Length: 199
Image 1 (cartoon, one colour):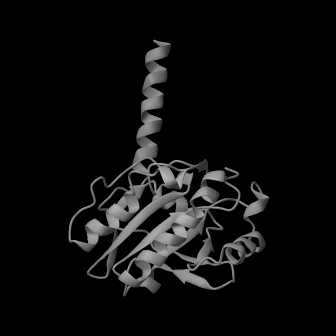
Image 2: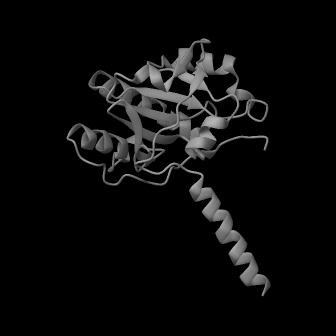
Image 3: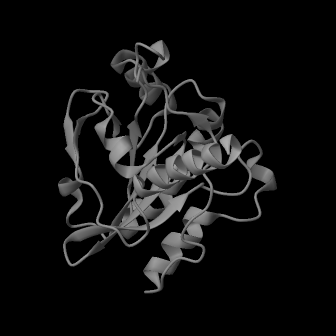
């Protein structure tokens, strides 16, 4: 009886987690967040773009670090084609002191990020999207002025060795959108560090 009850509780918890995450096809959640320089960046700023490559990432996570150059490359490859990167740091900086605004600014300058690096100070945005790792990708498509989620998950299939990548999920998803098709796959499992929160 106890094992059946435990299984039921776990099942309900999993259901809640799944329901809390945006799915492909869902409307994107708007945001207005400060970047490392104090400028407010909103999703609505990109209304003239074809889409946005939204990346939940951070400073200290080894997976986030391993992907930094590839995230820069994604922006450099697709920004001019209408799919720029916006990076969101969801970590609570009291729990993760490497993720303060000052440290984010230092990282942005050190790596010469060509995209905004903004802070989810209240941690409401990552929860609204259902991000749970750094990095975690939400590719948004602009459909008649409204952003919808087109792909969720990992950047590619090899976090720690870019030379060994065989599946470039985000690139393939963007190329699908450019061709007028739905990404396939439109969901993969994000690999990275857990998001740091006090709650």
